[in-house]
Length: 225
Length: 224
Image 1 (cartoon, each protein chain N blue to C red):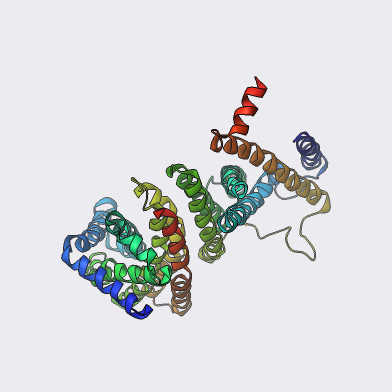
Image 2 (cartoon, chains in turn brown, red):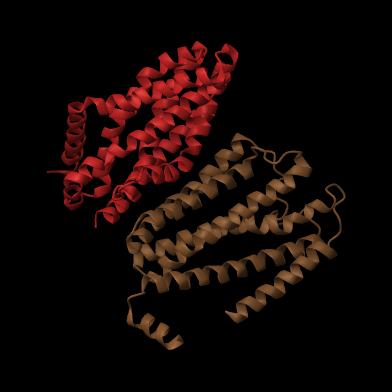
């Protein structure tokens, strides 16, 4: 854990410094484009974590590994927060750029629906009292969601689009300058570290709560006093 | 009993049960009609405005009606224990569950098609888009039942599953709403809608094949 935290701090400082100080000002958008160093990595994370959650859920469903179930549900709230951050920063960026806080743009809308999917997962987990059963329910839901996300995403894109096209994933020649790209990738990496840290802490709490009647937990608590 | 016999036996049983309790068929239908009547009252009866929002309003109301009727899909079987018998039977659960979903759609989805023309007239939709509206309802409402069944199967064991059910199911309904609503909109401006109809057909086929599997898994989870 200390290693993860120090790596996270280092990369975040480097990424933020590179993004906020070293990277040049955009000739069209001025300084306000710099919000992408938060916005884009959290949008990536929001999808990435959903996939992690579904994979962990599937592992838990098939092999009944308790730890995978715990990873799945611990990812949900972190993922929901990243989705929320992506939405808020997107809206903050949209105000000076598009002149309005909210646009029914395809990517924003599918991000919003993703947030609802996360909230559904969290709500379902909270609603079922038996946590083993709840984990299985969450895993099924997450798998259904993973099949549906591409469909929802493309149907929303088809419905309406205003967003800038992807500027980084064009493999041959990204339409973003290297001095802007490197901090962005650093931030993406640092967000991954943050996810692992936050998820592990949640998983620890979840595990202790579930096993609160087990002997090793009692030993742990009496040992720490 | 062969699988085919069991499949049709389930459909017949559910239809008979539904016909004995007719008010449960009428309720979603009444809800559908009532919600649509509320829109002109809330927005104002300006014909051009109503015409513009008609496809969306009809589809959103159909979505809500379908969602409200979902609870009856497994509820009574769960309460009286026949759901456990279905799970215990030697036939694959997903196929039997598909039978239940089809019966449920015949009872709650199909009647929407019957009242839809009336509501289209209420909202002043042009006649040429009426056929497309019915076609999208015919293709779309089974998908609503299939996807909704996943949500009900996950929440059937809960005492108050209603709110959580809408949170689970509505985001998954988005593609159907987009393509169906858009098809009707296009049709009323006289444009071709082959693409949307084809996509709706493919969504229906995919849901028909894939949805019963998570439903069966979720039911097994809810029962024990």
